[in-house]
Each structure stands twice: as structure tokens, then as C-alpha cells.
Image 1 (cartoon, protein in one colour):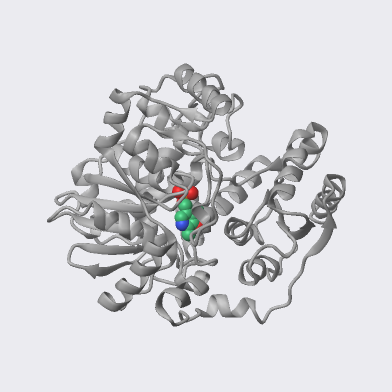
Image 2: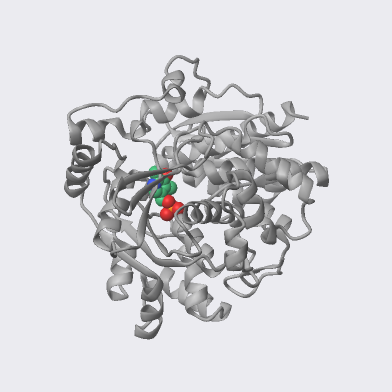
Length: 465
Ligand SMILES: *Cc1c(COP(=O)(O)O)cnc(C)c1O
């Protein structure tokens, strides 16, 4: 399997190459040169298989010759052993033909664990084979940092250093990062805001000498391997509800477009998906696009679903590549215009094509809270605010006789204030989250200074030699 850049001007790479590269040299994102496909009989053969074996069969075509079958099976088994549900991503019925696909049974109780746990093990394997080490550096305002730390802790040949803005994350979010006791993990609280943290990370990546000296890398959501890992649960859930002999639809609370793009990939591989429904909060750039070809950047508004508070969905470029008939030059031109003008228009023909696959709807915080309480009253099920937005969108586009499956992206206990506000009661705190309030925290406070962060990363890397 070869991967090509969405901007058409970077060398094509194999799976190992895209795993380590993340972003392509031309600023584009890597996508498979062609979509592998599974036949209806291939899908039927997945019935009754566990998550790990499903993951192996669904993602094997993307790996090519990079990893042997035995090694890859072992990597998958180890990755999902950290989930505390034997179905890994269980389905829960919420109503007639209405389902919750719970993606939050991993170490940090949010769906990013599903992809990042696999990524950590893939890195370890590939680096050992190449005799290399990497240092992962990232900035976080909350959830991604903890999922990345849990994915990389105790992995050989990987060091991870995560910056968070001092005093500006919730206590639970901070503790999920800072209570991890592993020699290869370093948490730094920067005296500044999230943008200061991001600027430091950018400065580190811009310094070629530093970058090469520690073999700097990132685990951001544009990495193809993350999208690949997310394809699995769409197949797993659809097969359990009768695919390929029955169509299903998915509703997905969307921010960076990574999760919903994985569902699109499943459809391209042959899974009969009737519709992909996107839920947006007040930051509704995607909904404006699918409704009216209006992808224009506005300022970010804080909402009760903070993991979707973004203006530009980085993975959208992968869909754009398909809408432009896989013409990298056209995508590059269009992205250049988007950056310059803050606005992207694809035209009626391409929009119509996009709308055969996708629908989108936006919901306010008030609607989200009301729905959380309504769902609790109707089915006794507590949803986090992100999931509630997905479910609201799913309800809006629910067709008779087609099972609607909502991607439940975070455990409600991660957003207990919103749940309290919606229902009058705090959700039950699972043991995994309760634990972090008992453990000792480890982090270093540094001023807003890239040089000092570089020194810290150097030191971390040295201790692992
Ligand atoms: C990251 C995240 C999302 C958005 O997923 P994308 O792949 O960025 O679209 C939704 N909900 C939760 C809880 C998240 O952490």
C-alpha cells in the first residue's frame, strides 16, 4: 500500500513512512493511493469476531509489507488490552433503531484513546526495527494531551513531553496527565495560555538542529494511522447491527473531521452506510459548508463541548481531495486561497456530491443540556455534551428502518459540571478517573520560553539513552 499527499507534491510513502512523517512535505495530508475494498462476504465473515480480530482484518490492507501479520496481531492485542470493556467499543440501545457506540472505555475515557493506543504500539514496533528513537512534543488545552501520554507511557524508544497552560486546564484534565508515573513522560506547565504553548511547540519544530538532535515528532490528528484505527469501530458496530445485509447510518460529533472521515473511509471500503451525519456546536463551520457551501473562518466561541471548539477542521482536506477528483494541484490551490481569504468555496456540483454522503446540523449549549436531560428521562442514559450533539444531529436525520448509530466520544464523568447543570445530578465517577485524584502529581513549571523547553526535552531524551 502506497500513500500520496492531498497536495500532490510530496514523495509517496509506505505505511511506516506515513506513520513517522505525519504531515507530508508539501503541507498536505497522506491518503491511500486507492481505497482497499471488502466484499459483502468479507463483512459477513466478521460476524462474531472480537474487536482485535476485526481490527486486524479491516486494517491489514493499509499496512502493506511494513509489519508482519504475527507482529501486527500482537500490536493490536496489546493496544486494546488497556480498554476496560471486553467489547472495546460496545453498542448500547437508546431507542428503537437508535444506538450509542461507546468509544470511551480506554485509559482517558475519550474516543482518542482508540487510535492513540494503537499509535503508541505501532511507533514502538517500527522504531525498534529501525533502531531509532523519537521525542514527541505537543501542546494541549485538555484531552488530547492525556490520551497521547497514556499512549506513549512506557513505550520503548519514545519520549513524550506535553505542555499545558498553567492553571488553565480543569483539575481532572491536568491530573490525568500529571499523575502518570513513567520515566519517558514529562509534563510542563507553561506560565502562559494555550497559544503560548502552541507557539513554543512551533518554535521547536522550526529549529532544524534541535528537531534532528532529538528526532522530534508529533501525534496530531492528521496522522493517517489515527484515521485508519478509527475505521474499525464503524465496521464492528455496523456488522453487529446486520451489515452488509442491512444499511446503517452514523451520527458523529465533529471537530477536526478525523472521526467522521474514518466513517467515510469505511464507506469507501464497501460498508453499506446510508448517511454520515455531522453534529456541530456553535462553532459551525462544517454545518455551514454542508448547508450552503460557506466554509468561512469565524472566531472560536467557547461551548460546553470544548473538543469541538475549533475553526478549521484539519482532516477536511482529505475529503476535499476526493471532492476534487483526487487532483492534488487543485487542492493545493484551494487550501492556499482558504489560508489567504479565510474562505473556501467548492461550487454547487462538488457540494451536491458531498451531500450524497453527509448531512450536518448545529446545536446550541441550551439545546445540548435539554437533550441530555431528555435522554436521561426517556432511556436512563447519561450522555456527555459532545455525544449529545451527535445524537441531536442523528435524531434530525433519522430515517425509518435504518439504524442510527451515535458515536459516543467521551464518558459523561469527564464533563460532570455540564451533566450536573443538565440533570441536577453529578454522574458517577468511574474508578479510572477517581484514581487520578489520589495519585501524586509530577510536573515542572517553566516560563514562556522555548529555550528552556528545549533543554528539558534534551534532558528527558538523555535519561532514556
Ligand atoms: C476530539 C473530540 C471530538 C472531535 O473529533 P474529531 O475527530 O476532531 O472530529 C469529539 N468529541 C470528543 C469528546 C473529542 O475528544
